[in-house]
Image (cartoon, rainbow, N blue to C red):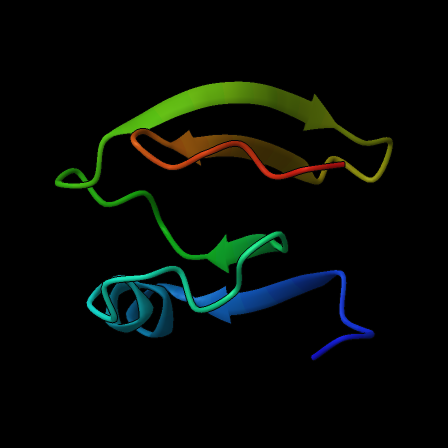
Length: 69
């Protein structure tokens, strides 16, 4: 994992990883692909619309430290 800067995963995998206690991916950005779940506290970071009409919304899970960039 030393050469990996970020991870992408689905919502179920992310929620399973949250049960591990400690963050299994310290210092790495984690991107979760899923519809927004109402029971996870989120903070809206930004929304971008591209020329192709693709819309990307970014949220931060509250209570977790921000990803280092």
